[in-house]
Image (cartoon, rainbow, N blue to C red; front, side):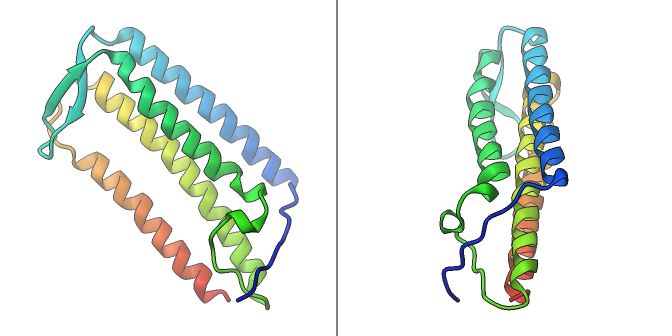
Length: 160
């Protein structure tokens, strides 16, 4: 393994993804603001392992995790344009390098979209649902994100 540096050139497909991603981010924020305006004065802000609320507060509390998740999603979506030294993935010289690069870019984009989806899901679960029966849907969502990351990492390693 060596320190391979490559530049990701923005193709038309990449520009379309970037625009769609930004529009989707703004749309999700619009939905979150709409949910906040419709929510009661006190909403659940934390859920225990059983899925039952164990802390309550203002609906605007959702803005804190939503902001953090937006920053994470933006970093994941646009880190592919940074020099490779800032991305800690094993890139190798050889025929598989191009495939590794494509898989890494796809993984970054999938994670970015998944984080936005999780952000929307948490906002709907917190502000839009009256009966909170289980935390299992959120755990499944997070498990899928972790599983996809593991699968892509293995695929990148095998592409060397």
